[in-house]
Amino acid sequence: MTDLLRRLAAAPGVYRGRGDGLESGPFVARIKVTSVVRGNAVTLDYEAVSDSKGLQHVEHTILTASEAGRLELHVTCLELPGVTRFVESQPGVFNAYEGPMPAKIIMTMPSDGVLTYGWWWSRDEAEPREQSRAEVRRTG
Image (cartoon, rainbow, N blue to C red; front, side, top):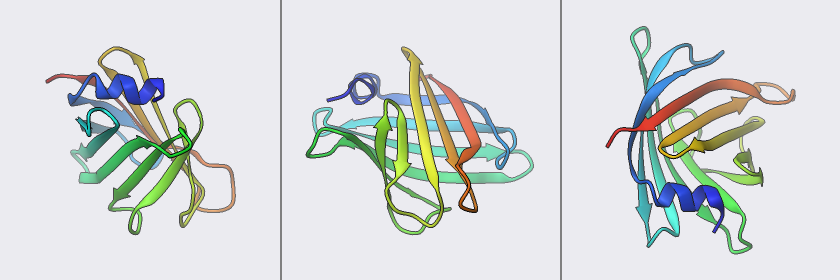
């Protein structure tokens, strides 16, 4: 089990904070982290809301280790069709295994009780750029 999965499984709860980005603009973020199957996986239920756009992002993600021991995110959200698998390429950097456009998610825990979650993508063949990033703290 890698450090990110272990740390999130040990710190379940509701995380709240703010975010911003090129695509999203400023927003308020809420991520509920739930440890499942004795910490072998973590679910993340992520919502982003802004005054100007209302509810702008709803996501349900499962973080788990593959058979080979690499971390994977299995993401379903309003912006993507079905479930998209993101595979960790370096600590906290998850690249889309398959999907409609180049994309990645960058997730870190810079300190206990703090989580950052960033969506990167490109609408063409260019290298993905950060489009939104939330920094949330565990509140309950």
